[in-house]
Image (cartoon, rainbow, N blue to C red; front, side, top):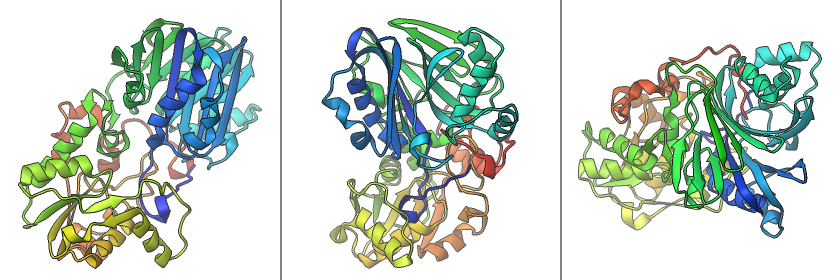
Length: 471
């Protein structure tokens, strides 16, 4: 890879994708139910969506570019009785936003019919691609997800389970795979547990998803985390859980708690909202600048701003309103259009901030372009002082496990210190949460990957930035 798309041509971060699966004892309208689960995961991928389900002894699959409501809404008006299906939403970090890269990928091979959806990045994808290409493999997409299908098909093992297990042993990096093999659903999580994956039960259904928010709409009776290195096989309501990959250290992505996961989700055993609130509280403890108001950059700064205000005693105000209907748009080619894009997306509440000293809470700082325009927006609305506070440490290293963090050279914190950053974006001050304070916000800090802040990668990175791949 790397195909990096920046929101409105600016510097928002994006995760790879989300997966959802349903297995039912009785025939139900699987595509319709998958639609609702995928809609809850829309924040994890907005560029394509798809579903695959088992009907009349075959896997039927449909995928399209666009958001869930555009790509899959016809399933709300159609009845497709089935007992099993999987779905996927994708943000294209590897291969671009093309229909052939949408998932689930459905194939027929010597191991049977397989449909596969993936969240994460195979960090040794370049080596595997070179090997498989040299052996004659022909690829229909440019995603690293397809590598697993080729490995399974080429495995000397005749049985699907053994072929899958052997193939998983060749992969490095982050992956949550959700697949159907004929009429069986299989979920696998990498041995480091970098990306989240959960399972729930309700009535006569078994549900699997990237986040608990996708299960909540179904009111599950129980929810459990699929463990790192674990394989879950589902047939009807029967589940088999096996530890198929050795699990040593864990390396949960800390950015799931900082930004990616929905605040009402539980991820890695933590309430996302409460974790972000603790980060905001920690950020406020060393505050030295006197401010009149705390405002959040919606929506990613909302929870941290609550914690910051509670800890500092500074009133929390609704100072920015976000236009939720704007969505992700094309990259704006000029400075004037980029500024106009920010003004269309974020609207200051002038009466609340005029003449005030403001602490602005956001989740992270990437290139600084969005923050620069945001500070100008607030000053134009009458803010007397603008102090930017980030509820994460300074980003200094690229991610090789499913987040489109740019190269080290593009990350502004590698070029400017906080004082220089404040001058660059036009703020009165800029301050980040320290890495020690971030780790103190979780009870098991050794179980989290913080490589984007520290450069301490939990598994080998063989491909380099040009080889980063993502589902």
